Every structure is written in C-alpha cells, then in structure tokens.
Length: 263
Ligand code: ADP
Ligand code: MG
Image 1 (tube, rainbow, N blue to C red):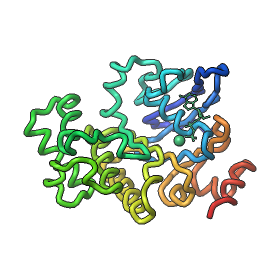
Image 2 (image 1 turned 180 degrees about the vertical axis):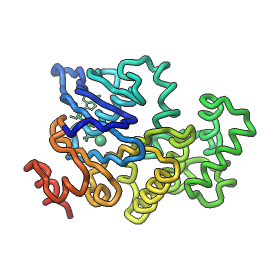
Image 3 (image 1 turned 120 degrees about the vertical axis):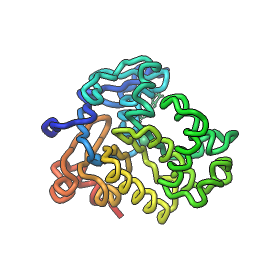
Image 4 (image 1 turned 90 degrees about the horizontal axis):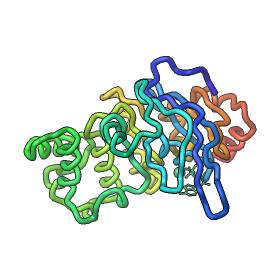
C-alpha cells in the first residue's frame, strides 16, 4: 500500500468483503486499502473475479444480501461503512455517483428518459417539476446527447447503447457528486463509442473537479486516463502507484504478466 493521500475524498482501510454461500464463506476482498484524492482518476485493474467490483459495491453499500463487509470507508472524513440504506441514500446519488457496465439494466424500460432523470432530482434535491425538467435537459445536453429536448420523451430502447450510457452518466452527475465510481462503463460498447464515453468522462472530471474511480480490464484506457492504478489479484491489492511508474517498472510478477498480456 502507498502512503495515505493527504486530501482524500474517499479513504478505504482494511476492507474485507465476504459472502455466505452454500459451501460456507467466500472471501472476495481481503483487506484492501485505498485513497482517492480530490480531482484524481484512480483505476482498478485485475483479472475477472479478483474482487474489483465487490470492493466498490461495499464502498457504495450495495452488497448482495448474502454479503458482508468489515473495515473502514470514509467519505470526506465521515465513516459510511455499515450505515443503513436510508442513511446511505444521503451519500449515494449526492456525494457518490455510479455507473455500471450495462446501462440497459439500470434504466427502467417502462419510463421515459426525462422522468427517470427528474425523479431523483425531485427526491434528493427537492426540485419542483419545472426545475427538474430544466435540469434534466441541461444534463442531457452536458453529456452530449443529440436532440436532448426530444430525448426527454424517449424510452430507453429508442436510444443506442452509447446514448444510454450517456444518460446513465447524466443521472450519476445529477447531484454533482464528489466521486464518480464507474465499473467497466464501456465494456459493453463498441470501440469508437468507448473512446467517446471516456473523453466525455475526462472532460466532465476537469469541468467539475470530481474524482473518478474506474474499474476496467483495459490497460490502454488506464494508461490514457488514470493518474494512479491499483492492481488486484485474488481479493488483494497487490500493487499501487502512479500509472506511469507502475507501467514503467511493475514491482509484482502479476502486474508484469498483465502488462505482457496487453494486446
Ligand atoms: P471482479 O469485478 O474483479 O471481476 P467481483 O468483485 O465481481 O470480481 O467478484 C469477486 C468474487 O466475489 C468472485 O469470486 C465472485 O464470484 C464473488 N461474488 C460476487 N458476488 C457474490 C455473491 N452475491 N455471492 C457469492 N459470491 C459472490
Ligand atoms: Mg467486476
């Protein structure tokens, strides 16, 4: 583990995540510590099943019902691990935003895009109908959706995969979070759209000064967008440091192997 970051927005210490299964307990995350500084992009890499997603799910308080977490998760200095779902709602969607791999599963197919953007604004930010509508339009414009005004009245299936991911980013940004957590946000998209989404995220980060935690298995993306990188293997953070330093001189054999496997 590297030295603690001074101005950390998010600070995770000795995080353990386990699941109760029919065969007993499965340890998915085994004592991970990480800090996210204000305005930085941190990438988490590692092979499938290494615990990347569950680390961040625990941070967001979104573990499956058979899961449990121990350790410490501080957001802006406040302990949030173990808070009730109701208490966590103060942070999720307001100070932490999140986007996932497959935007179709996160959007409700039965409701128009506008309504899905407006509802959290009305609930969290207590906006009136007209104000939420105006903000929804502003958000769709911000994430570069063509003809945003018409799109407020579209259903999710009327949009392309890339556009749906843009809507998810708009939703995640609605309450101006300090940290945006993105779990393989471009994996389901084709390569040119991937690049556009990543450029969008990088631009938004600079514009709002937010921090991004980015889970990916694409080392090219890490090279291009991440300030620091954490390499996970079998539930542990085996290497962490500035991206350039880690890629130029990986300390762990496992990291060297990941780099060698890069296409
Ligand atoms: P990654 O994102 O690095 O691919 P995950 O964090 O999704 O890996 O998974 C880590 C481990 O946790 C895997 O072995 C996975 O099968 C296990 N896991 C995730 N969710 C559950 C669950 N609800 N019950 C049991 N095991 C789970
Ligand atoms: Mg995952």
